[in-house]
Length: 593
Image: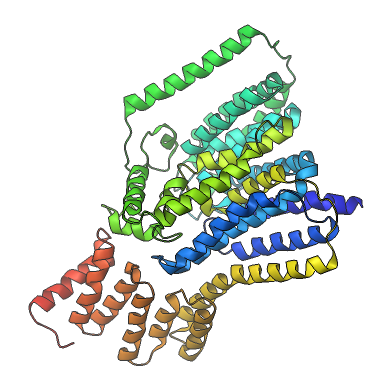
């Protein structure tokens, strides 16, 4: 019975752990396997614990997944829309796994805190011992990324850890807060720091024992600031393009400073606490107000721009949006042209190529979750998103202690998603939705019968197939392109298999074009790719370059003209130069095909 009881904690904690360590960044490769784990956990928990209460709160999230799938019909990137529907389905499954932790929230909060501590410690260990985490042969970027794959999302994980640390307090809470603060600043993530300030402020407004939380925070913050200051003067830790020797040398120094800072934070945590008096509260509020006013003055003095920001420690003090204002404008422009249903889930990449004014201004998402859904899924998509989040957040009201800490994780995710692409990272989305599920859930009333499990198993199998097919199609497409020159017959077979499981892809057509023995046959496959995704400039570029290489400037001009129309400000050497060359030949009537 104890093993069955512990399963309701082990399953959600393990799911969060696998997502944080093996989420695969913004790539979709982990989606079917994380989904398989969630589905397996749901079936086992149904069998041994029964159906939990609160499942109706997940209906809006499932409706959002369905709307993403429906958008395939008009999507500019239909294959990406399927991937996005699967991603939303995965998050709904993660929330469903969290439902069973409803009667063990305290244990789940401790488990999640332990997993986050492991992620932060592993990330920092990569700075101390270079082989632990490969930042590239020449240390291309110094920003801390860890297993999550991108600095901003690692910063969000640190925000999760920080709010749990404020709840735990004591020695373990102080150490967790210390790890979170050092990690947060070494990611250079301004959005992560602002999110930490927002959720931290909410914690101190609603928490019961503010003095203990503040003591843990101060005990962690003081040595963390010193360690971060030391890291900023060590080129092997915070400077790009450093040799392995410099990384080892500075890593040892940083490691010693990191351990010393942890010891100091533990010593500070043992100091006597001040009394909770009205004067202390007024002083804390005044200090917060001064900090806010100082920040506003700093921003107003430096101005707000939209240009690029270098990945250096100066990133923390920059007030530029790093192209975000441009991306938000592009998303709004796309919405005004497609108000009701948008351009299709996950299709902003093509919106960006169509509207951008400079080739460096390239992204896959607008770095603002509401604007992204407004652009890609229209008003209907935004309403479903707001409804899904409102239903989940409603369970966070009037929480205290460990439940308040869990209740702040989804808000932290949503606040950070106003300036970043967190929805594309299962590593940070899954813990947020599992925590939300734990808050909306209620303990199971009775075990499910065998007859009830049979249709549940069928639905789970169908869901896994839906999650798996795009992964299979993409894998077989890549293998087909790789084999197209050396083993054309095998490449054609793989391309057929890829098309059979995911007919929305255009890559199998390109693989068959590579494997074709006659130019006319190859060109016909390129044309089929353009018909499969007519709003994708990549298909027109490949068709145009092939026609140019085959000595058919007119056909090359027809295709490359579509490419430059859909990608107006791309790099010249990627297709614009070729377009001007064939255009000159066509104007001179120097063509036969």
